[in-house]
Image 1: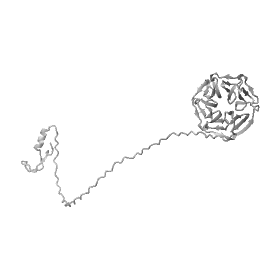
Image 2: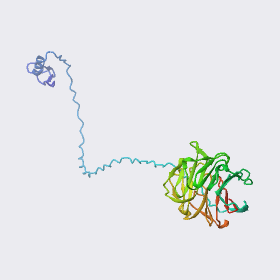
Image 3: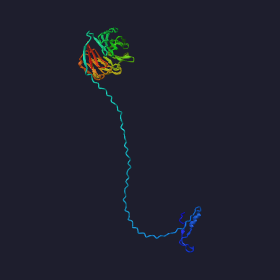
Image 4: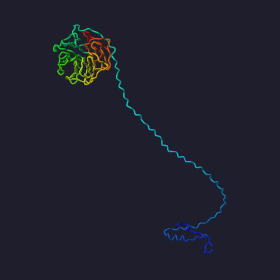
Length: 359
């Protein structure tokens, strides 16, 4: 209930005698409120005096000019621009692989040759072998005997224990200590004491052997021995037959010091090489097909020398990939061809002449 009727002021009061003004008279509304709400306390404030002040004349207010219509200002809402985040992509850096540059192998072009006459006794040497220093020499004569020397070939000692045979090829290690010799339609013998004593290689048997070679180093308690047949195959330790090259007229065979790299030539055919102890073979096609008579190898198998019967000598300094014809040495009927283990000295035999080349 609103409290606006708590007090009422009456200008005139009937029966109040004297017409007193401003006396508060409790209204019925107030009484009723008091009876209805006994719990509330009614505070009676003293009567307020009404003070009436004259109101000064108010100047008339000038009419307010109508407010001109304000043109609507378009609200431009700028689009929220997301900040551009630059995606930094790190470049993929490939690992730097240093190229493996193979050293340039220059062909053997500066070979100088000297000619020396030996063995003027007209013995028909079939094959000759020697140590790198030339001190130990081994040689054989077809249908006769095997000879060894420990004084640079001055004195030749016949190996009577081997008897007479169709000795066809002989080869020694670079120090001359290990020697192997084979006979046409006969056996293969080896020596480990400069040719003083000999051991027959029974596993190879008697075949039409045309050439034999023996390695410098020992693998699995034995040297690597390779032998080839005239119109046959190539054989290795324990007489194992290597048939991958087929049946051919093999004329000569040589190996590196460790026996891993092997090279062999065919009469009126190609030169073949193997880099896995004779397991697989490949023809050295750049050498061409010729009447190859002999082939020799340096200790690492990198430098090769080959001769053509009644023809020139050829050299290679890149494992037989390329060949150079040695025309300065002339045409000859080569019967033996030697190459030092370091590949710097060539010794060739023709009849009773020794031809030595250095490069």
